[in-house]
Image 1 (cartoon, rainbow over the protein chains, first blue to last red):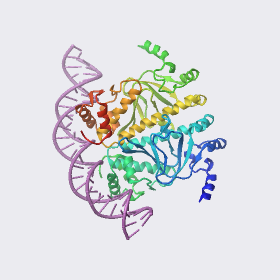
Image 2: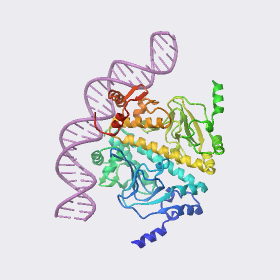
Image 3: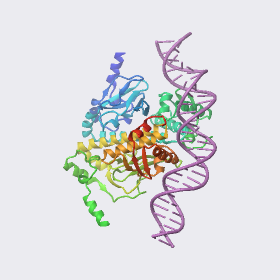
Image 4: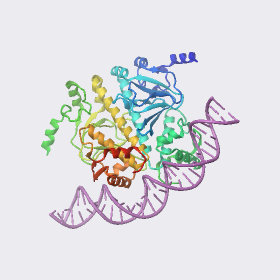
Length: 243
Length: 243
DNA sequence: CGCAGTTTTGATAACTCTCAAAGTTAGTGG
DNA sequence: CCACTAACTTTGAGAGTTATCAAAACTGCG
């Protein structure tokens, strides 16, 4: 077990990483890539429930998801959490902590998950000398913002079915752009987390899944989702009318 | 009129700008500040309803609000808009467009508003040689993300009164941190825009204002707001219980 | 196999949306 | 300066959707 870890660890490098196109290495010359590679800490994989950082922790590192899924959430004063995002391979986590020097949310793994840890000050140093890295960092930041915009768009929807439909479509296109099936995939979050993310009650989400299934737009079995009528789902996402 | 514009224009520089501490100049040496200053385009002030950029426009510039207020909004396929943010002096707009090379939302002025236009490629160039500028840019970006997180937090709230209360508290602290009164300020947006931002119907927002006033937590007269019971407002923001 | 946690289903109540109309403000032109 | 219009805001009544409470069904795990 330890052996495989070590072997794996040796193999792990940005140059051989499967998500390099989504991540900081994109567009870098191999010499630059090595410099980036040297500052990356690759920790052993996390398991479900493990925490990358907690709210109020000092900010030192950015994290990039390599495999698995991470959720980030704010903890309200009243004990009510709000999930801020689900993060998939290639996503970068922790950007919102830079200006305050400490994290405002907690990051927790939803399944077996591996991440790369990027010491922020060293990233700053290196990026000074590698224009391409700086540009790629900006692109990724911009992409993260666009992703958060999609969350805002979801929460701005008035109807519950619109929210779920928009969420599923977004997930579908994210998977597709990463080379996975856009019609069949696994939800890595619980119904509770999903409901929280969508700003709905758990029961509503559950009912919506059964309703969507009755309407024939998707098959759900626990966390396995198969979209059987993409256009139907798009209609549910965009219109206020009932069918 | 033209004369005063010109005079004002001559006077405008980052070195003399009242919001420099919130903006890119923060922490820069004066030589660096001049370099930054030279790349900034300062256009004549915009008036209510003017548009900085539209969705799908090519991305070339970032904008910093100098005075006034800007709203950014997505236009849905179905014609339903969603306001993504209200932007005040010191706020930077357009970051989410970098990765795609084109804007995903439209930016419109809510009142007389002046902005600084920052050609992004030149900003990249200059920031290569000024570490402090790069760091400050990152901080501002991080601050913008945190601001969007607050919006997410608002939209995640289940009750309408929580949303409005959280919004008002956020506005209050933003004004306070900029040296204005935290208890008395003007809303620059219409009830319609506010309702949209909060994910509520206009009528609900209107009713909430009268209810808050009846409960004695604030005085509202059109767009003028005075918070008379900050703790009361905090309670409304945080708890589900009725009073 | 049994237990804890999660998910689904059901019934009810409450909140918010929608529709409708009156009241108000601001801007325009006589 | 006032009247008038258009846009915005407030208020009211009713319907609908979703949250809440409660309990059953299911899953995963020891």
